[in-house]
Image (cartoon, rainbow, N blue to C red):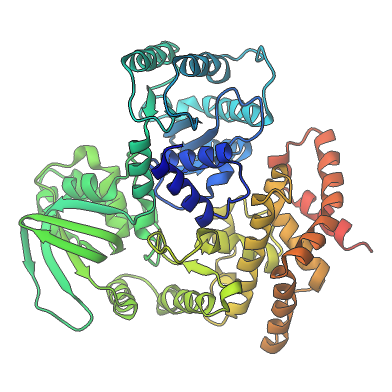
Length: 573
């Protein structure tokens, strides 16, 4: 393997705790991470999307972007496609070889296999792994909802990655031929067959491990005077089309959802206020007055450079203006240079200053003080609490996307983002392991039970630690990968075995003591593994019973019946 790529792969393995993988498997995970990150800017577990095992027909990594969400499991894809009103889908497939060159036969074989796997509805003419069958089921779910596609059919991206430095003309011609063959099926809006070299991998990895950076033009601006805690701030107006194209749109053409993690509220849909913003954009005269009719947006960045009319920002968030940004993105085809939007850019690296900016800008909208307190104080408290633990028990709470991406001292598997923490907490302390697959419904229904100012940070840390340990067992193959869909049920079962099924104690001191009992088990890898393996036979029996009744694994784990069966097995009467 190329010496530089080999070094990057080893660093990648160390960062993601994948040192147990063989060299070829590690390269597959690395290449898949690099490629998928070029389509999806939010954090994800790279080993989840690796096919693994034999009979994968040349497909080493598979990811499906459904309306900007990166998915892998057929049940998740089916749920996402059935619930969506409109669909935008990208299918990303990667073959990764450690060989120092691209081989025509490998490329041709991959193209032939894709004709069977992706295109044909017939039974495969040769043995295929469960992962390949899962991919076919994902595609069936997508094409069953083809009427929902607003901008054309799914787009297919096939990547052949090696450590080679050049792509020969023959290889390029074969790749073009494969694209034409796939496009001739009429199933895809576009089909791309790309060869990725070692230099491409280096560049993709660099981009994947850095915070998002953008460059946009804002010729009409003023620089405000220096103030405590703020290195520089700009106030100006810019074309809304420039904002959408250069700032809000990710490489796949979706809105950058990670930019709005610092917002108190997600996009609220077309309620009265947002419908009015949309009407202003569509009005023949009103759109020219948009900059004075709309409050605009506030960007907080931790890196800012101004070069003439160009503004360079990196590691930034839109802390106010989430509703405006989403409406402008939806109306992007209607935008002209006449539609201007006011923008504030604030450069600060002090968290207290950033928190104050978020609170101040959101107080000008209909957001309650309780929402602001929850958003700011409690999440900052969690971040500090996680980081204050002993080194061998330390985890990192990621409040904003790629917060720790550039920190070489932070093992990436010890980073827990809000979605992961929400699911783990709901499974352990809300008794909702079956609901974590319905994330939006869960967070809406249990909103008042999550991240409240009077909650104990110890509970969230215990949930994060349990999540870390179960993921470690899966990552190191101490648990079979097929058990990944039941991991939240496994976490809940382990909590029941240690603490029983009763709700966590209401008295803070007793609750902290319960957390300590969980943590003492979790942070002893051998004991945790033994405790989990004692539960696995019960899980396997329940899975086999459900499968015999015709219920797929990905579907059964979302059912209350499965959760009740696990509870009955773990806590016999």
